[in-house]
Length: 287
Image 1 (spheres, rainbow, N blue to C red):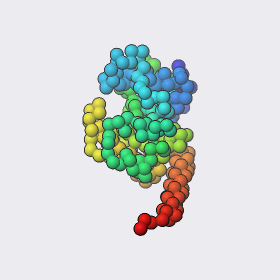
Image 2: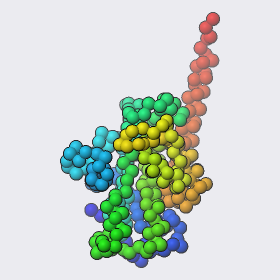
Image 3: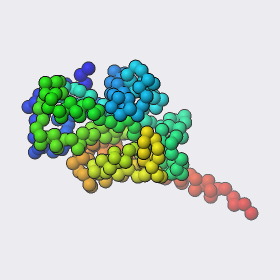
Image 4: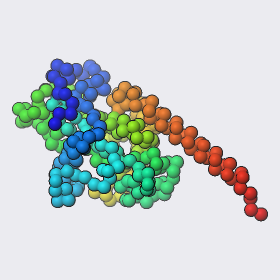
């Protein structure tokens, strides 16, 4: 299935003089998986990554070749698409809070019992979402960079050595952009996750600094529970890595939505605190 129209070598071959955003988006697109077909593609890519390439999940429990679980029903999903031939390269999901049972929305809540999870200022669960199934396929990386695959369909558009060096550290930016976009669309102000320390270090190099929730835990290996306010994250990325900020906000398009949601949440909290103060003033003190 073609998700974006393949584009010509001339169209994508900007070289190293273009901005990172122009360069990145000429090669990749991030597509929200809003249809059954696109979600099916995401689940099949997850099976390849989590049941075959990195056997974290049991293939026999996903015998149809699709890796799914109970969180998918209340998640937003996206795909990273390699533009020259519309090949799916990666996927990520944003697990949304359950309005009927917010304290049982995320995998993190099952494996972490730190007190911070009960702090509604730092962990506002009704506007929190969990970043999960964040992956780029090893097969895509291998077939893309291995010259022995020069005749296969991933090599229809040639990338120079300098261009490869420029884009490889930034492959995941399209997934992060889609997370920001899905957050704005779903009223999300904070992210949480249970991440590998190596992924956290990679994100730090991009200017994204998650805050730890307690110590490392055992969950498919050693993982770090963590969280981050979205507006604070983007503000810091803009200071430390403005080139990355340009990519993950689509040139600032998502910044207004993120800022609006944060401001609305702040006003809501102020009103709630004012109401609590008024109740305390009306309540007579016991003798």
